[in-house]
Amino acid sequence: MAGQGDCCVKVAVRIRPQLSKEKIEGCHICTSVTPGEPQVLLGKDKAFTYDFVFDLDTWQEQIYSTCVSKLIEGCFEGYNATVLAYGQTGAGKTYTMGTGFDMATSEEEQGIIPRAIAHLFGGIAERKRRAQEQGMAGPEFKVSAQFLELYNEEILDLFDSTRDPDARHRRSNIKIHEDANGGIYTTGVTSRLIHSQEELIQCLKQGALSRTTASTQMNVQSSRSHAIFTIHLCQMRMCTQPDLVNEAVTGLPDGTPPSNEYETLTAKFHFVDLAGSERLKRTGATGERAKEGISINCGLLALGNVISALGDQSKKVVHVPYRDSKLTRLLQDSLGGNSQTIMIACVSPSDRDFMETLNTLKYANRARNIKNKVVVNQDKTSQQISALRAEIARLQMELMEYKAGKRVIGEDGAEGYSDLFRENAMLQKENAALRLRVKAMQEAIDAINNRVTQLMSQEANLLLAKAGDGNEAIGALIQNYIREIEELRTKLLESEAMNESLRRSLSRASARSPYSLGASPAAPAFGGSPASSMEDASEVIRRAKQDLERLKKKEVRQRRKSPEKEAFKKRAKLQQENSEETDENEAEEEEEERDESGCEGEEG
Figure 1 (cartoon, rainbow, N blue to C red):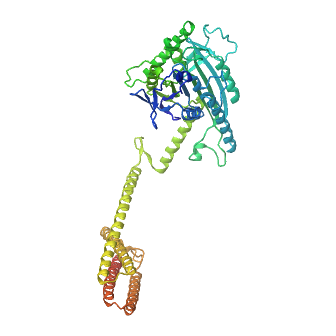
Figure 2 (figure 1 turned 45 degrees about the vertical axis):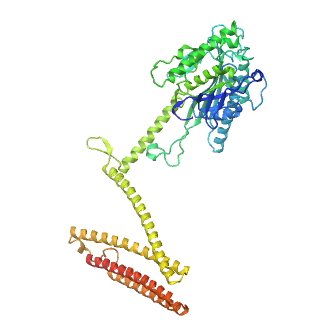
């Protein structure tokens, strides 16, 4: 998920376990998960497919490692990220996010935010240690945090210690602004500088305890506001420099180490714990609780309209209503902006919450169509340095092409590629095609030779079987002879083809310049004299005759030892045929060498 460019919003569904109260009241489970597939089946006929699906028995660690771990790693590379928890009231959103600090929780039950904080500071320590081992200057990190609460369409600062908790209905001084690049930022919010993991956990705990909660019929401790916990990460690290092509462009003398260049990356991580959608008939809320529920539903309705507008496949909707609610305005970066976003939809498995679960699954299904435009957050100086470095690398490559003759400048001053380069590219392509063809033909020749050898050896074995002699050693010997004969025949054909090509080239050369061949009579035509070629040919013939005499003597000795005369006659006949073929091959080779020597004599 840490790639640059368009990135779809990821959607995960978590089904919470049944509560004791639901089991006592006899509620049945109406949800099921398809094994091996991220698909939820609601009832008997309603199926929904998402990016991730977590069933009743899923642990917190599995949810974090699957969904959020990659987002934290992306923050170190300068990418924004958002985790959004949505669902009906009492579906387990606060438990999943880990912002409920009213009771002691074990390490296994820690939510997404505490685990992300531990991962963040662990990554910072790991990168500093790695830079120290490599002998480089370590990166510098600056971590700050904000904690906002959206209560009845008013933005409250949970880190503001001077705020009166009972004065929630007063108008807030926090303003929402948009910068030149379309990024959203707030003014009037307390931003705390963090130095350690324990300090950030303490800030999160303090803000979570200041959040507005109340009891309803559906949830004993229901969140009555939307909470947004934001971590800002600023990183200054040594940037990797590409290898420079030559010293003329860099202007550095030999042995001078390049100067260290640093780049500044910023990233922000939103953890959004939305208040649960609720029906007043189910919650039984009255008075102040009813007003809170109406405000919560209005914000979620505006969020749903934004999701529908962004996820419209027909592209008929041009306007996206971000300004209809402060919630959608704060999340403008996360939905359709510069952020990697994952939405975790929390649902109840009980059949009495069937309609709420169905609406939540439909809501989450629309969010899968949203596309965000993800880019690295660099400061202007780092961006300019990166652009200049890329320009230098491009100019160096262009200079090398001019030096190599790949690029030329025409008479009219226009740049272009040289004809030699184009011809070279065409010849290389043709050469590669011919190589493949030669390789295929060589494999075909080998297969044909093996087949011919096999057939001839079978024929020889049949003759031996008719003669009544089934000696396997003789059959193997015959097969080896036949294979050697076929190899020699193949080499002979290749030599004939080469001799023919040399003869043609010689005739072309003599036709072009009839007087040029006599210019240097002392030089041999192809690097050898006719006398030496004749001596080599006579030496080969002499060795072949010695081998034939040796084989004949061996055959005579075997005849004297064996009582079976008929088998020896057959064997002698086969041996004579092989010897004749060998003599024919040697005679052809001798004739070929004489032709070559004759060609050389003609050229001399």
